[in-house]
Image (cartoon, rainbow, N blue to C red; front, side):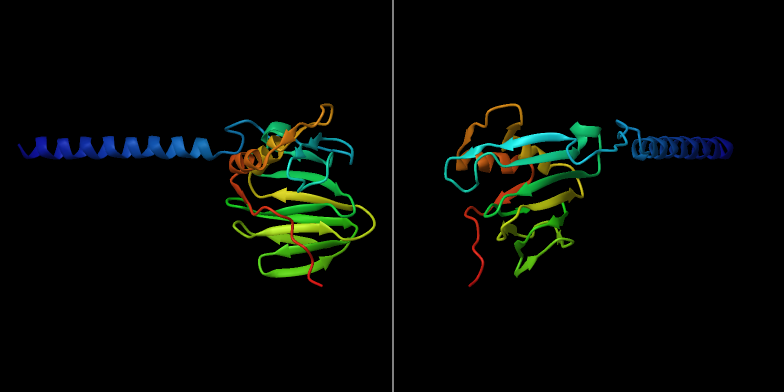
Length: 203
C-alpha cells in the first residue's frame, strides 16, 4: 500500500514537472527574437521610405499637402519594436496638440526653429535639439522660423503609424478631405488622443 502511494506521488510530481517544462519551453520559444516575422535590416537614404501626403483637414487645422516619410514599422520592414520616420515642416506649419497613450516618442530636430509645448514646458529648439515625449504627455510643435523644420520621429513601439496612415494617402494619390470626426477615429487606431486646435507661442 505504502509503495503504491509513493509511486502515485512520484508519478504526479513527474507529470507536473513535465507540464511546467513544456510551459517554460513554449514561453521561451515565443520570446525568442525572430519567432515571429524577422525584422529586415535597412540602409536608407533621405528620400527612401514610404512617402505619404496628409489628407486635407476640413477644419483647416493643418496646411494642405504636407508630407512625411515612414521608414521603420511592421509594414515597412517587419519591425516589432520601433517605428521611425522623417518630416519637413514648412514655416508656420504645426503638429497639433496630442498625446500617445502607449508609446514613448523621441523627436530629433535637424534644422530650423521649432517652438515646442511638452506637458507644462514651452521653449524654442533649434538644429540638434531633442524632444523626449513620455506616454500620456501632451505635445505640440510649431515652425516659427523662416526655413523648414526637418525632424526625425522615433516611437518605442508600433501603433501610431496606423493613425498616420489613416490621416494620409500614398504620395502618388490625391489627398482626400478628412473631418474632425474622422481624425478622432484615426487617433483611436494608434492609441492616441487629440486636443484639437494648434497652440500659439506666449508673447
